[in-house]
Image (cartoon, rainbow, N blue to C red; front, side, top):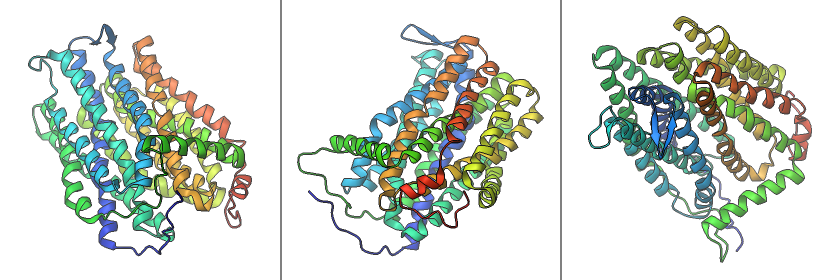
Length: 451
């Protein structure tokens, strides 16, 4: 059947927009407190008390277990996202699924509180495995909910307002995640039982996620009728898979420069995501950084990234987004080399953290805006849906490579060098991309855009 012809002008409801943005505030606590800061080092420390993690006869090094769980959760996201994307496009279940996955993810995060050494019935090894399973469920749910969350943006804001609405949501995410992390830092400093403080902090991210989702997002978001009707004889699964391959064929034949950029982005972004996942693990394992020091580091990165995004936005206005991203990738390579060669003191960790924050906010913000210049005006949602699916399709490789390097070398310091491969290869692939041709191929006017 043909797509539904629904093209009525979108009238922004400020109350609904705030409810949508507050989901970023709600869920960012999970990625900041749990994924980036506390869970990896905590599971590693619990595993170290028994020497290694044993699962079905396979032994994991303590520092390799959490990156492996990250990779598994992302692989599962790749399997589910095409179906979820089809549901978002073709059904009226968008809000219901957003709430369902947010609830499952938040509850799994809260249950991480029970993970401790010598857990009744399962012991320490079983506790680590249970912690890994709960994290996989939580991270899978986090990614699934994001698909539906992003799908609401075209519903709540007209094209000319989407950049501003999206940016404010992103900013609220930084602020919400940073605020809870600051509370966690106070908990780690005032509580005498550090392990209990870490467990409470991890669980608090789940509570934060759940409470703010139901307090602001649930009552304010309104479900709209779908813009597309599922073709006769198709299921969400079959239509989701066909949509991916249709977009892939179109990119290959009609937008080759966009495809080249997308491949480069997927590779260097994998390096960025790997740094985010393993940075605190490296700091705790190799430098002996304590939990409160890790929280302070992430807090520093959280707020400095605001300035980084603004700085690279200024650079892009003068030198172009592509050149600015190239500059950021060179800095990423320097950061990884410095982490291996000269990072031995905690104060050096904070200095390097500031440098990470500057390029973190800038490289990610400019990557998305540059991609938006290279896609056809009428197909933004489909292309960005493919962008999201493709990104998750590769972001497990870096953590898995890092985990393998730890398994082989037994040290995170040598393993961190593996991340350089992603930045160097991404840089090599990005340099020949012709941004002007990509824009013209997509029917966009490059006039006024600094290239």
